[in-house]
Length: 131
View 1: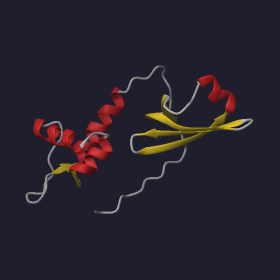
View 2: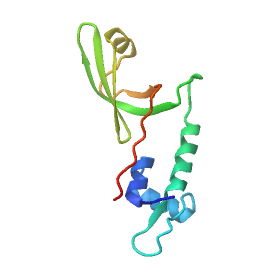
View 3: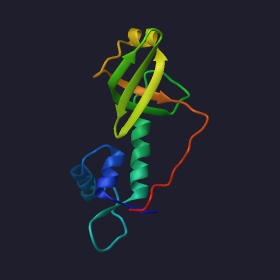
């Protein structure tokens, strides 16, 4: 498995570089296999931690969707019938188009704490370019 820079691991986990370094020191994450140069993080240990964290997320109800991204509303645009809602979920921007009535009933406004729940029949996986 590949190694990640500390900053890359921190970005994936949604924590600071210092937190990743503390987790490396505590054994919560495994160090990468590079013996020289800056400290790296074993990508497999990051994947395991991310999987554990996703299983610990509290769910108010049971559902079939597995892609749940807690975040904050950054923009709401409403017209006569529809509403566009943008959510910042960690490093990801998620956009939802819903009825204006739904947005009004939920009281969505910038600053609202929400979760974007995504269910799709197609998932595209891209391999990140080597850095």
